[in-house]
Length: 143
Length: 113
Image 1 (cartoon, rainbow over the protein chains, first blue to last red):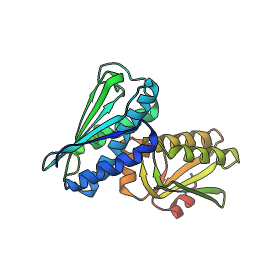
Image 2: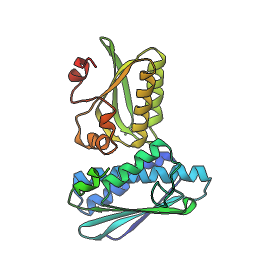
Image 3: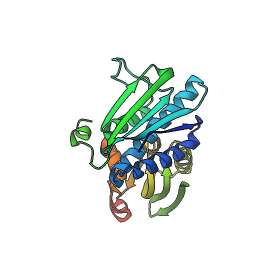
Image 4: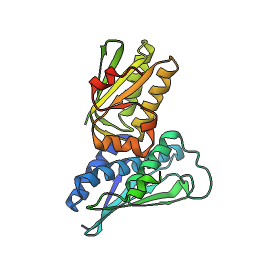
């Protein structure tokens, strides 16, 4: 499956639509239902964060999502827009509220690979999921 | 999917049935409902999540907020959840140590803690 790009307004009412579109792409790429549930939550968390960050920063323009499967066993999602630098990424403490920290914990626990890029006003979250396997146990146990 | 919220009394407990998707868009409705219930004096709350299709950190935050509210009145808030995909979210975030989580409503109602 080639990469698909999706632009959504920075409004929380579109988070559900993002979940539907990305999971449809993952299903087309052959992802198992169990992994789709993980993907759905991680994408929802990252999109919610990006939308809320856009509002805090009063940033203009849409949230951009790029997703697809570069190989038969990997599905990737990148969310571009205003965001945050989570605790530990830049060595400083995040000022994110409790819900955002819970969201970060979920993203890290559910995606196989996560890469955050700052700064906060022009951030990206890149996530990779194995299409057919459950995430490594260590990914969850280490939390 | 729409968020559905229905509550009823079961003895000294108040059961709040939640259905549908709980995310950043719908969670404020759940927050309002919990605030309303506590405001009306419902301090022993069981949140039945067996019909929840999706839950994210916003929903978790609302439940934690509800727990704090009832505890400030010496109350309790327990959950009914038997779906692995939802339980997984509580496990990853460590909230299984915060909420009493039951497999069934009967079990939750029998719990005297």
